[in-house]
Length: 533
Image (cartoon, rainbow, N blue to C red; front, side, top):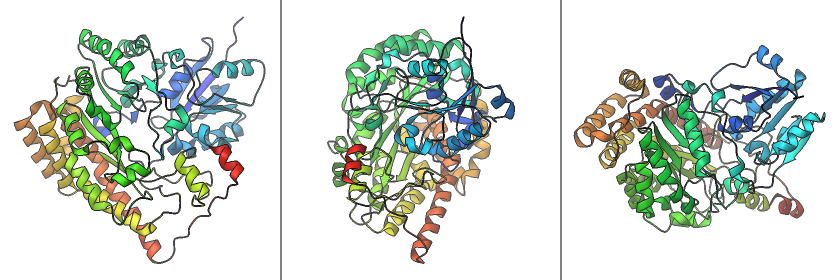
C-alpha cells in the first residue's frame, strides 16, 4: 500500500526594493517575475511519486486560504532577500497547525532565525531528503536534517519538476550544470555553501532537462544558474559539443545566459564554443578596479589581466557582459567613485549591479569582522532591499559617510540616460553575434510596448534610446535584439537607481545631523569563532 501526502510548496516573496526585480521589463513581455524557483521544483522531484505536489510562487500569484487548507505539509525557503516573507509563511502555517519544512541557502547559513519551522533541511537536499521522508512516514513532526557542505553527488540530482511551473509567468527558466567555485573570495558565501571543488552533472542529465523544457513548449531564454560555469573547464569542454549538437537538431530553441569568472576571456576556444551553443550573456563579478582591493578580498583572478581587454574579448565573441561591483571594502583609500565609473565606462557594460558591501553569514569576511569586533548585531530581519540599500552591516574602515557618498555618486552617474545608452551604443558595435536572434511569440509586441514606454524611464531616456537604436541598426543589426533587451531593463534600472540615490541621500543627511545610531556590535568568544569557521 502506497502512502499519500499533499505538499504545498511556497516560494517566498523577494523584497520589493531589489535591483533584480525588473518588474517593468516583465510587463513588456507579459511575464510576472524574472526567474522561476528552480530549487523548489528540484526538491519536488525528490518526493515520492504517490505524494501530490502543488507550487505557489508568491512573486507571481496569490496564496489563498484554500491552498493552505488543502495541504498536509508546507515546504518553503529561499535566499536572504526572501527571509522576511519566509518567516511570515512559517508563522502563518504554525498558526493554522500546518507542519512546515524550510530549506535553501538562508536557513543553511542562519538556522537559528528559522527555529519556528517544524523541520529544517540544511545544505543540499539530494542525499538527505530520503532521511526526511522516512522520518515523516514514521510519524516525526519536527527535526533537523543536515548535509555536509559541498559533498553532494549532483549526478544524483533528479530532473526538476518543470511541469509545476506556469512557464509564461517568467522572463527565463533556470537549469544547472555545476555547483561550487574554485576561487576563495572573502565576501562570497558560495564556497562556504557549495564548496571549492565544482561538481558537475552528466551530459545526459542536462540534456534531459532541456528535452523536458522543449517538450513543455518552452522557447527562449534559459539561464544556467551555476555559481561559476567555467569552474570545471574540463567538464564544460566535454559538455558543450553535445549542447551545440542538441541546439542544431532543435533549430536553436534556446538562448543561454550564465555566471562565470573573468578568466573566461583567456580561453578563446571555450568562448567560441559557448557562442556557437547560443550563449548571449554572462554575469561577471568585477567588484573593484583597484588591485589592492582585489588582492585583499582574495579575488586575485581579476588582477592578472586587463579588465577592459578581457571584457572586450567576451563582447567580440558575441556574448555581452553584466557585472557586479561593490563599494565599502577596507582597502579603499580615499574616494573610489571616479575609478569605478571610469572602469564601467571603459568596459562598456550597461547593466552593473553596484552594491554596498554586506557581510553574509558564514563567509570569511564575516568571521574576520567578528574577530575584529566590527560586525553589527543581526536582529534576524533584513532591511527592505538588497545590497543596494541594505549593505554595510559592519563598522567601515573609512568614514561611513564617505562610503555612502561614493556609492550614490557611482549609481547616479552610470544610470544617467546619456551614460547608460552610451555604453549600450558602444556595446552594440562590439557585439559580434554568430547567430541571429530566433524570434519567439511576443517579441514584436514587447518591442512596440518598449517604444511607447521608454520615456517613462526618466527625462532624456527616449532620445538616448533612439540614438543608440539607430546606431546599432546602421553598424551591427545582428546585435539589435540584444540592445533592445537591455533597453527594456532600463525601464527598471533608471528609476530604481534614482530611488536608491534618494535613500542614500537621506541616510547621509542623518549622518550629517548626528541622527544615525550605530547598531550594537556582535561579541563572540574565540571558541565560537572557531565553531563558525
